[in-house]
Length: 307
Image (cartoon, rainbow, N blue to C red):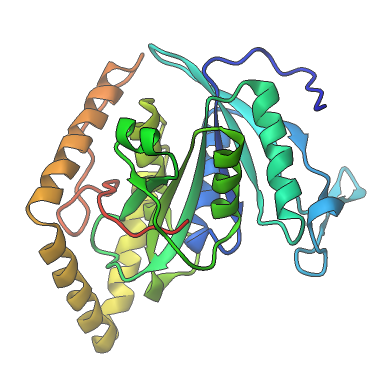
């Protein structure tokens, strides 16, 4: 039995998880959860025992000084709770850590134990993968689930992926077997610029999470960071003719595949997001600034999924 002390009764709680490593191209997913913790001032209430799940020769502990005292931070997975205000407040149980080195089934069962004790109604796992997508276009974000009813109700894809998977896919499958509704949101990161950070992909994941849960997430400096990131990649691509030609090929393929239907869906979602921000208490919403491609920097239309 998991005993939780100091955690208040939660309102319509949703667990949102992300893990550094194989499922986190450009650190986009883990940065998204870190953003939620920071913006909503989350406080850690539990941490998994690092020795149960991590190989310290793969994920090494770090040493730091605090008030002249030498301390060690162990690689692990931590849980925190934040409350998202608005007309319909709800709580998010945030899970942020590193993909475990071992005992994945026990790892997932422990997280599901917390979910059960906290009354979690839905689990959303964020991930990011490398894809053949141009950095100049809105980041493709796919929402997938193994639950047929959930797919229809929340306009998601039923996962049909076959192949190697990471902790995101394993956790989603564990949720399915436990009868807990679960969704994975995947952002596609350009494979030719995969090094972190990727604020544009992080912003796309958060926007898709907003749409999925019908809540408002403060964006902070992410929109400006996303525009600066794209300008920087534009400059790097301009210096290499082969890369510039390759990016143009990806743009043409993307535009041909998505127009005109997808662009209409993206505009509709952006307008809904604008209304949600405008109606939020104290909100002063304005439409997102366009990025270099003419779309908004936080659009998230597209496909490209893994489970």
